[in-house]
Length: 130
Image (cartoon, rainbow, N blue to C red; front, side, top):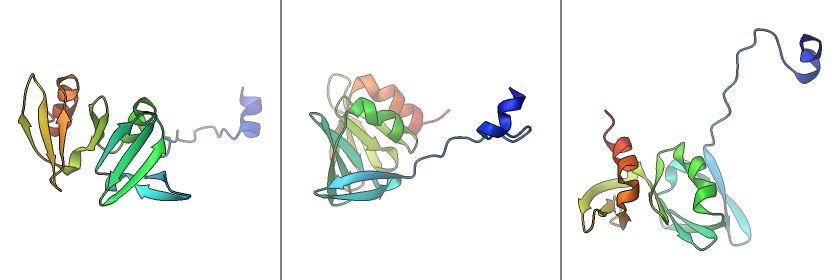
């Protein structure tokens, strides 16, 4: 293998590089593509095979599924709280029980979302680390 190292760019003793973390996401806005800082995303909702990103007063629709986007958003504390909703944990103002184990999540801007009992433990682990 050492004979091939120069050809494939491996340098003996070189530190292993971690993959670059994504800081921005390319989102379609009509016919143009907008690069949005991941930290600026407030919440995301599913709409069929599309996701609607709520970024301040702006809305961006992307053809993608919740499953495809989940790992990309988890890098920046955007977590799934319902089968059709992601939320930026940094935007959560309060959480209160509503019914059957579900909870109401209120964001800084007053938007109310539902935290289902399925995702509650994951969200609490981020909010209240041990």
